[in-house]
Amino acid sequence: MSTPSVSSLRLRIGDLVAHVRIGSRRDGDFHLEGDPVALAHRQQSFMPGRWTQLDEVHGTCVMRVERAGQHDAAVADAAVTEVPGAVLSVWVGDCAPMVLVGERDGVAVLAALHAGWRGALDGIVAATVSAMRARDVTAVLGPCIHGCCNEFGADLLDEFERRFGPAVRTTTSWGTPSLHLPAVVAAACDELGVALVDRSVCTRCDPSRWFSHRRGDLGRQVVAACLMAAG
Image 1 (cartoon, helix red, strand yellow):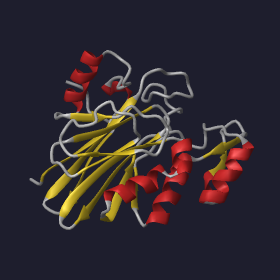
Image 2 (cartoon, helix red, strand yellow):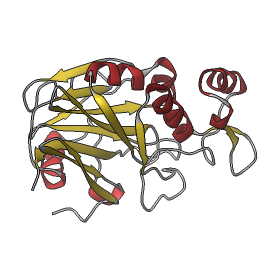
Image 3 (tube, one colour):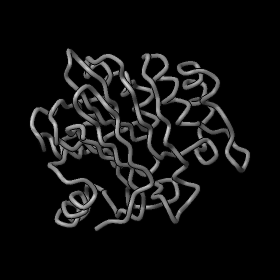
Image 4 (tube, helix red, strand yellow):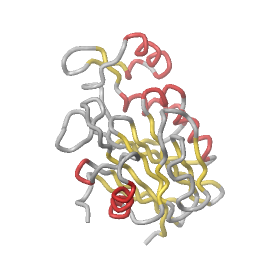
């Protein structure tokens, strides 16, 4: 049995609840390229059910999950479902993991997406919201790298600032230009009329708690969510 993760929350959508769990290093390594037997055991300890854990490639492809477990290990960066009990997950080591919930014609809609800087710039948040076709969408942002540690090239920073505004540009704790990924997510959500619940902390700052690609870790933490009956 895994130890409790950093955060667990429930969001009500009509007659259902979206259970969202945000994992940390102590919940184990959820890298898709690890031992598949160990990964399956870890998944069930974290959130029981049939999982869709995508092979993330920093793109904008969104998969529609019409039965629990569908598209598991498929190449994409977001998944959308209306199926109660289907577990959608995002595995990250600095990129932004997001869970989105909304309602369409009385039906609860759940989505999960992986947003690194490239996917965020190319529009993965907008692509996912469009695929949901839902109203009153709320997004939950999990742990990701913050501006204090996300050193970034000037040309790309200029592009991000033109696209998302000046709040995305900042400096690292050692004084170099950086990108604040939570501000990028917040700007994308604001543009789309999506309410944001920010549960992010900087993954690179605390090696005892988080895996971080920028720090050289090979492991990845997970964020998972599923729809279930309210109770």
